[in-house]
Image 1 (tube, rainbow, N blue to C red):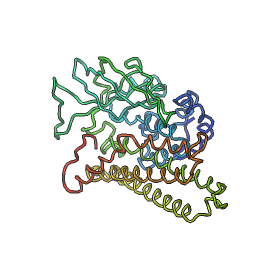
Image 2 (image 1 turned 90 degrees about the vertical axis):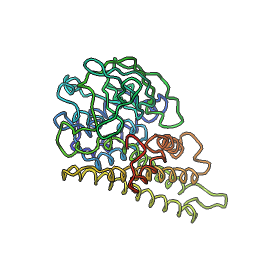
Image 3 (image 1 turned 45 degrees about the vertical axis):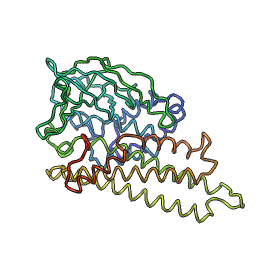
Image 4 (image 1 turned 90 degrees about the horizontal axis):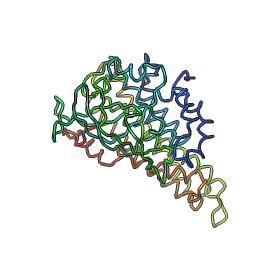
Length: 382
């Protein structure tokens, strides 16, 4: 049953996520039972329009939910983030939505940050290729594939001169999954490869991001990728917060060679305090950037390139801080951090893998700086 408010979701699902932790690690995916519980609670409907059964929640709220799940389990938080593609219902026309939601069953989505290519054909587009790292794909009814539009060897541009990137919604029978997810961390995310071979995607299942959304409400009037990209950073903040909590519990009882506890060390006290301060500051910066985007939509103002750059900058800062905090906690744990079964060990692995995501690449700082200096960003989806 869908919860009354999305911010209640992590607490509501805490026991279910905890019970599935070992199965996630061993099975390299979320157990089907947990996926059903997440779906039925509404965890995959955070950005879905209200008329399609969703929360249509503000971005700031959505990021807090992702962070909350990240504190419980990185893989669960990652799947919740990557499954929240219900906003596509605000972009597609009614015939497309009828294909996805018309049966009355709750659709489960999965997406990749990689961008493929598509060519026009009668009634739609033909899509082929391989998309890597598609988290949660084994449970997905629909694969959301981003692709450039090509005409021969040329990639087409929008009227604004940007690369024409669109979202293509593929049914389960239109793609295959290759078991490639043998990772050091985020093992429960099931981030396998997806293969598509000459799939025809009808035009009513293709969404553009360079034109106004069909649903004329605040949540969908800005730059649509801004609803997607920051979720991974929120999950990392949740993982880093749990790492501090695990380490703080560990150092109280872990003895040093001189007979005291690690908690009694001035170094330990300083590292914990600095890490908490840095993490809280990074969190507030990310939420503030999300709030500014929410407010622009609510006030019918454009989500400017400067607002998008502020969000990207906050994401890159959160990634940098998250990496520093995870490393600091791993080091504080000393030899305890190297053993399987220790909470810090798994949080470190999971967090570091999450930080390898393209959206956490340091190259985004360059584009943020370019915008600040009055230049265009160098990245196509910014």
